[in-house]
Image 1 (cartoon, rainbow, N blue to C red):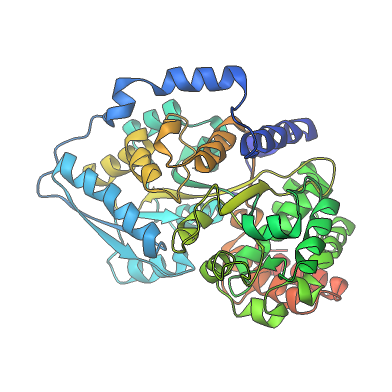
Image 2: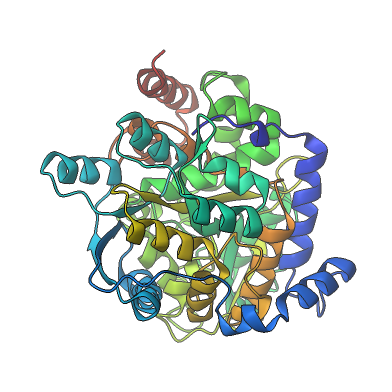
Length: 460
């Protein structure tokens, strides 16, 4: 779904969201601001929420379900614990089906073979729309919609809608406006957490001068590069332009895109600023881009890595401790305000049944999200999840920032695009930005390729 009323917002709203995010994420703060926190504490102290029994589920003895998602590793393992709680409470048997990117293609082959999963977790609003257009997706039932109305801001509800009907439960979210850093590297370099892009370049130079490469970039995964672009573009061009480009109402040859790519090249164009240089980055997958930032003692392969809150899953695979060894700051302001970019995975019913509807109802409740929140490396847009469910102060502040932003976030631009442009490995925006990382002097050529691929995917 690429166009909802909730996505057309003002510069003022974006600045408010950015201020909230920056305040909530500042690790130097010992307390987070006033009335919102008091309200949050009182709301989250309810016995029902803490005991994880806020939603009544039917008995489903003998029912079987398949749930498909692209999650792997710890993310998949933790989600299976949530499914285990659903099994325990309902008597149903749930099987996790590992999917491949792009998940729409994976589901298409399953459906063509007559074996669709009952529920799928879709990582793009565009994928939800495509599933509806293909007549694969089924509308959410009354119980699931009731949980959405109770637990989610209107913006998160709207992103799951197609043609006014609710199809998606955003079970997992991401704050994609974060830069993680090796605290020891910053200490040795005398570097400070930057507030602006100019400050970031200064910080990077200090890290470089100390003998450590500033940035780790997971360029083998094209989606990480789209996230870099989106944060720069949102802050520099502003939310109105962001919405227009997301809907392809302006072309990728627009001067605002040139400005953002030129800004990106201030980092991507300095080979010594990127671990392994561009060629090395293009061979580095996202998990390795994180772990190599927090291994190697005083001489890791890089001092900083940009990506969302979910990077904590990968940090946990190292000896680094989040909040002490691994710290985080909001993506710096390139223009007048810092960006607030979010992403997420929505549960969509493909085979309508009492059991499938019960599962998405469970996933829309705080019960499910609270289980996974406690396991770390996870963020929920569900405002009824208690702050105390998150395992450390860093994660709690990131979660507060997302919920406090309300409707004033911008959803990941590439996730709003048709999957052929914004969500397919080796094609479209992913490939075009990988090529730009390799040759960041070719701004005009990159714009032309982006526009050609976007026009084909959007249909003109």
